[in-house]
Length: 172
Image 1 (spheres, rainbow, N blue to C red):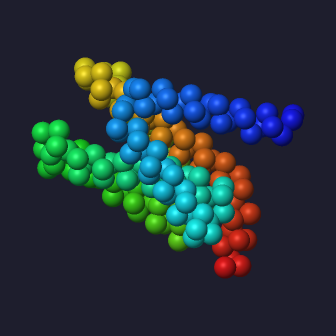
Image 2: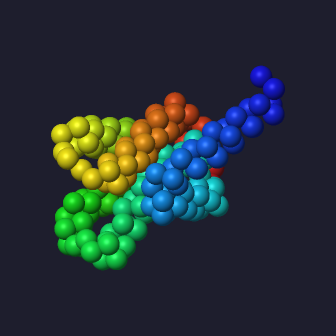
C-alpha cells in the first residue's frame, strides 16, 4: 500500500471523527481530546514505548476526563458528592492501574487493565440498555464506552508487544 494512503486515511478518519465528536459532545469532547493529547505527549517525553504508551494514554485520559467532570459538576448544578460516589471508585482504580502499568510494565498489569475495562464496558452497556437517560448522558456514556474499548484494544496490542517494551524498560 502506498505510504501516502497510509498517512492520509487515518488523518481523514481522525478529522471526521473529531467533527462528529465535537458536534455530539461539545466541550466534553474537547476535554477528552486535550487529555489524550497531553497524556500521549507526557508518556512520550517519559520515554515509554509507543505500544505501552497507547493503553496508558487511554486509561489516564479517561481518568482525567472523570476528574474534569467532577471539577465542573458544580457549574452544571450537579452534586460533587453524588458524582464522587458514582465515579470516585473508577477514578481511583484507573489511577492505580496507570501507576502499576507505568512502574511495572508487566503483562499482569495489562491483563488486569483489560479485565477491569472489559467489565466496566459490560456494566456501561447494561446501564445504556436498561436506564432511561437524557440524550446528553447517553452520548457521554457511549463516548466513555469507546474510550474503554480503545483501552482494551491498545492494552491487548501492548501485551503482544510486551517483549519490546520490557527490554526497553530494563535498559533505562
